[in-house]
Image (cartoon, rainbow, N blue to C red; front, side):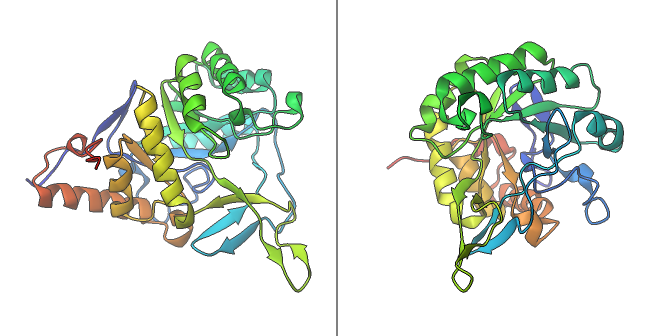
Amino acid sequence: MSHPDLGVKIGPLELKNPVLTASGTFGYGQEFSPLIDLNKLGGIVVKGISLKPREGNPPPRIVETPCGMLNAIGLANPGIEAFINEKLPRLRELNTAVIVNIYGHTVDEYGSVAAGLKGVEGIAAIEVNISCPNVEHGGMAFGVDPDISARVTERVLEESDKPVIVKLSPNVTDIKSVARAVEKAGAHALSLINTLTGMVIDIERREPMLANVFGGLSGPAIRPVALYMVYQVVGAVSIPVIGVGGIMNYRDALEFLMAGARAIQVGTANFISPKSALDIIDGLRTFCREQGISGIGEIIGTLRDK
């Protein structure tokens, strides 16, 4: 068996393999094009796009932590108009799925970004970041509240002509309730988890290491948390789930797939080795071949509960 089938379906979205690059860790793809063959990826989730350009937080905004990193980039991006005119043309040349991560600070803002992408060619799906602060509700993250998460989802779906994936925050009491609300609102798929909130202190200066004080924790340190939340959500909804969080190699990816995720995203690993995602694809292919598995679908959801 020389060529196991790694193709997967995420609702209406078809991927050549289940390995995507996570938003915010892979730029707009072209930053990595001199280093790897982007066409081998299952897909690229681009850096988050907002309605207007955003500079993000002041530096320092990245700090290394044991088994991970904290980032407080602040969702810096050129805005939707510049993305469509300057970034998307080169992405259209690729033979892989391009997924656009979007965010807003009001429900209407999410809708406006989705509307701006309507009819635009070269976009396979939209991923909605609901971990942003909701300025209409005192800065509380959209993704903390199931009802508001559902409203954002509905608004994006009203304005979009593309499959909608909602990215869930782990910084909640019960991620299953948010997942169910978003599913009921019509989302085609879910991705989880986004980063965990954390901070680091410089003990000599007695100051936070990040200018923003706190940031998002990613990397291997959060993988067990991400895996558990994926496992929970897979059992709570019927729509496809994409696993994200500390996936560094094909063995990590297999854990998420066996727990029921239909695809995975590679994030922090990209900073360590630009070819991490391709190594994971190769590892999955080799594992299938060695196990006599004809397709990756034979692995998905095969966890045996004790």
